[in-house]
Length: 213
Image (tube, rainbow, N blue to C red; front, side, top):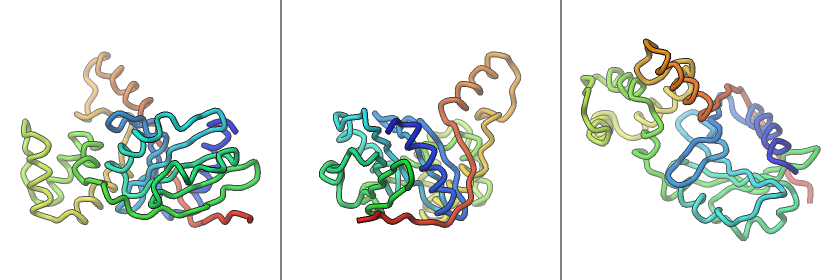
């Protein structure tokens, strides 16, 4: 199966499984490009797709990068990859896709290496400012992001900030860039570039597949 043959059924599956989900495609994380990051309530879930034409050459690096950004991770493959479980950690989930079904072979467990600060790096500056305002902190313009992260976590705690983060990603408007106002054609070009690199779609769902033995 080709990437597109796997990707579209995967989105349909996410529609069915989660009550609320938004997907970000082809997002750069560290030294890898995540095929799909699904934003759900309070979590980021990563999906690495391996088509029948793909190998596992880069998978070791991809696993390392996904683990640091995503609360849970899945590898999604066609049924040609029958030995895929040998190539991913036991806390990674495994999803098989064929012409008829999306099959959850193994559900993902919590990544032991995920870091909230890495996840917060996915936010635009304007989104980070909205979280500061929501949590009663002044907008610290010109301040290093890690200093802002420290203040947010010390004020509201990691679970609250993570929910704030996922809510911002749910509501993200890809027609604007960080400042929220387009003043020049040059900036408009940056907007189109940002939107094309972080493709998104909104979904509503509640489903889990089972593999036929």
